Structure formats: structure tokens, C-alpha cells
Amino acid sequence: MPRILTYNVRRCLGTDKRLSPGRIADVIAAYEPDVVALQELDVGRARTGGVDQAHLIAQALGMQMHFHASLRVLEEEYGNAILTHRPSQLIKSGPLPGPTGRFAPEPRGALWASINFGGTNVQVITTHLGLRQGERLTQADCLLGPQWLGHQACRDPVILLGDFNASPRSRAYQRLTALLRDAQKSAPHQKAKPTFPSRLPVLRIDHVFVSSSVHVTRVESVRTPMARVASDHLPLMVEFQVQPVRVQKLGVEQASE
Image (cartoon, rainbow, N blue to C red; front, side, top):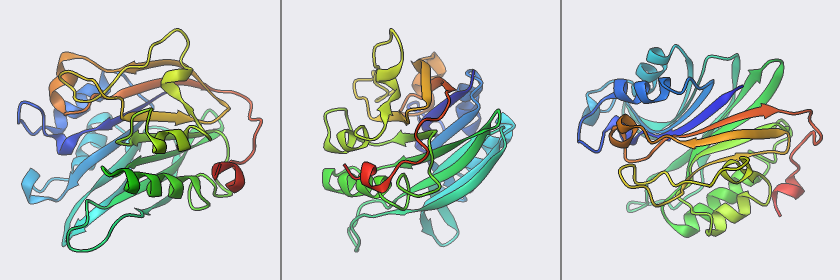
């Protein structure tokens, strides 16, 4: 049964202050996911030794990689990635709206790949939303609009996942769940579990949202001893099946509700 995992890796810096892309890869490998969405990756940045963290993790897992840099400063990059060993095609990557100017917060972006699961293409979009409420709402509305979830190519089945910096009580979360289901609430006989901070998780801000044809069979907030120190977030793993598609497209009107 396919598995997809989302993980904010905090530039592979553990809570023990050790920098280790290899440890992040080991945490992921233990769960043998088909697709991995990663946030907060450094590529060619001096602060993390100038390495391409996305490439190193993908190589260790034997996966191909799609990367989007939310932030570029000269040759240094920082952003999100989708890794998979299944046939995949990059559909789109780009920025999300946010404040600009000298004192603007960290820029945000999203990444969309079409991934083939046994003949069915699943549209997988990963993102990392901002820290401010207003910023998150604007970014959520953008994701729900015609550039992303409302795009004519974004047909069910769809999985949207990442670090949304938004609890289930937040307005951004509620707008997203007006269109898609929260995988943690869809899993049978399971209680939703937090993922942040990793040593003593109390917040549920990392999410996997799924469309109608994605049947969630199991969800796990990965709490192994290694996962508790590898990053300040825990990974969230979802096991699923793709059922016959009933809705061919996530419409712009539907996405805007």
C-alpha cells in the first residue's frame, strides 16, 4: 500500500545541534515511503557546509527529486522538495504571496508534481506557509485558486501536504479543509497526533490533506528516538489507497468556498 510522508527537516539540524542529512534520510528510510515532501532544505548554503541537502537525501533513499527554492541569495538556495522512486513529472513550482520589503518575513513557495501510482496519476503539492495569520490566509487562498488546486490539470486524486504553521482551529486550516480532508481525521480508529516540537510534540501544524478518491488507511506521527532529535519537527506518514475517481477536477468555484 502506498505511503507518503511530510517532514520539515530544519536544514537537517537536529535538536542536539548536529547537522546531518544522513540522519534525516535514515529516519525516512525506516518507513519506506513512496513519496517524501521535505521543507526547509539548504542547497549550497555556507551555514550548512555548502552541500545540496535535497540531493544528498534523495541519493541516500534511491529517489528522484524535484526542488523549489523559496529563497535565493546569490548561489545559495533554501526551499522545499518532493522525492519519489515512482514515475513523476514536475508540473509547477513557484512563490506564494507574502509581504515584501526590507523587513519582510521569509518568502514562501509551493511545488507540484504528478506521481504515477499503478497507472493513476496523483497530483502532489507541498508547501511551507508563513508564520503570520494574515500571511497564511493569503497563501492558503492562493493554493485554493486557479494557479494550484483550482488549476484545470489538478484533477482528483490530489494530496496537499507540508508544514502549514496552522493548527486545526486556524482560519487557514479551515479554508483548506473546506475542499480537502485532513488525513489524520480520515484514518480509521486513530487519534490525531501533534508533530511539533519533536522532543515533546504539542502542536499539530504539519498536515496531509487529501481529495475524495484518496482513502486513508493509516497515519503515523513518527516518534522514533532518532526522529525526536533529527529535526525540531516529527515526520507525518500517511498510508493510502486510490479509489475510482468520482470528481474529475477540483473546480475554481469549489476551491474558493
